[in-house]
Image (cartoon, rainbow, N blue to C red):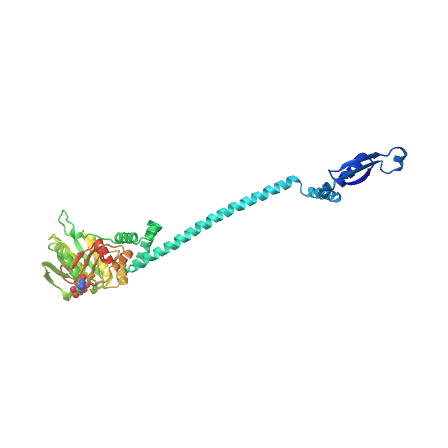
Length: 375
Ligand SMILES: Nc1nc2c(ncn2[C@@H]2O[C@H](COP(=O)(O)OP(=O)(O)O)[C@@H](O)[C@H]2O)c(=O)[nH]1
Ligand SMILES: [Mg+2]
């Protein structure tokens, strides 16, 4: 045990010194109060002898203890207990918030990874679809349309299924094909005749097509509009009347005359022999003067897709449909789909050979699709 004597002007003062020096474990061994003369001669009247056991001292060494107390007092000036608690609470809130954000970011990263994976898979499936459709010579516009539909309608799994994609492509393509029934097939209660005008800007198997069409209707009458007067004729072909006219006036007169027979009239507007704006003038005049008029643009499958598209776009405002000859020598019927994607005009007849009247086919979706896809 360590011992020491402490003095003070009062007992409290001496005890305070003990506490300061030895800490709370100090044991008071002796106290002395100097009174009388003894007291008068001394600076401090009280004396306390105190001690502390060694083990208590090691944890609260005399000077350390008092220093600790001093430090405590120093820090308590800076941070009081309440501030400290608030700070701890603030830090743990911050940590929680950061953890929440990390969780959110993790979710976003996972989602992005899934999306990326499925978009890569989708891209490869779409690439496959494109490759298949390209092999059929369908135009980029048509392919994009089908791919868009497939992307929209089919699930990721279905996109990888060639049969399903193939079915969707077939369905879309057949929906793209516009077909119309010729007016001259209609039976009218008043027995009035129909007037079918076939036109084109240059040779494309038009006269053959018109003759074949006329043969599908009993007792048809054909009027050949020609600009040059030298080529006047009146003849019979396969039992049908064929006559030529050279002016709009003559044409209107001829229609009026032939209408009385109540047999369908077919007009061969030969675009080779006069300027294109004449064609438009003649057509609008006939449409204005007569009923049951149908105007068909004649194109040939041996002409380029681009040329046919340009012509069809030019004629679209004045014609009701398309007839296409030379399909028998055409290697790729996809051109028919590509053309209609740009020009929304229905098909009516296809020329399938040079022979009049049999080499003609009434246009149908099924025949086009089965030709293209070799069904
Ligand atoms: N292979 C084939 N030849 C055709 C077809 N249509 C017309 N032709 C031939 O093409 C040539 C021009 O035909 P034409 O009817 O006089 O055309 P136009 O000058 O436009 O009136 C003729 O030799 C016809 O026999 C067809 O669909 N297929
Ligand atoms: Mg001709």
